[in-house]
Picture 1 (spheres, rainbow, N blue to C red):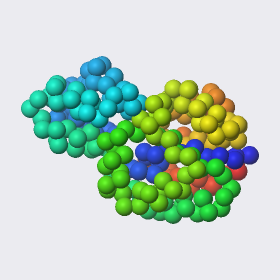
Picture 2: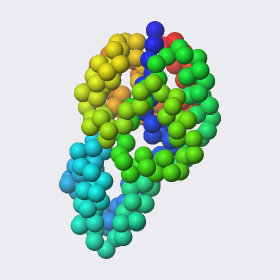
Picture 3: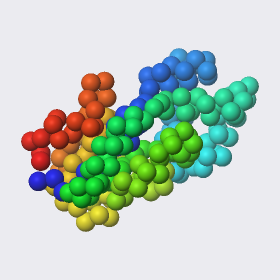
Picture 4: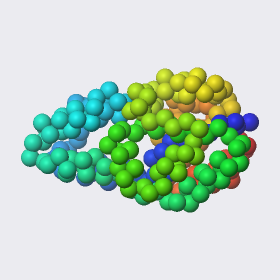
Length: 203
């Protein structure tokens, strides 16, 4: 029996274009693939281990001919639209009071600032959750096991009564190993609003 639902953010509520963002960045930086150092810096930033200033300084130092505004636009390229029917679904779920609702997202400061500026109902969205965890604020990151253990401990939850919804297979695998029930959602042909139809066997 599910008592709590833990949602990812990107490609669950907010649509992302990860492939497009990758190609846009490779073209902007004139690279064939991302260097290990760049991947490491991105990861540190997402986990809140370096500041936005330090993050931008890394890119400005390595690509001095690219204006900072263009670097930020590139970083935010993956962020697209947030269909409002997903907010409606979430509001109804909150109103039912049947489940503890938690957001667990690998999100950095620049991305969440974009969301706040561009998604008019961001505060309504945030207020639907009992807990709202962003990786850069809690300094933990999926798919590391410690972030899933943190959610269970902080909220006094049992994994077997907790459903985790994410589009990333590594994140899903990590949660599953700890005993979470999971829905590995495919954003190409599935939508979170069909939760109780798609995963009805869990409820």
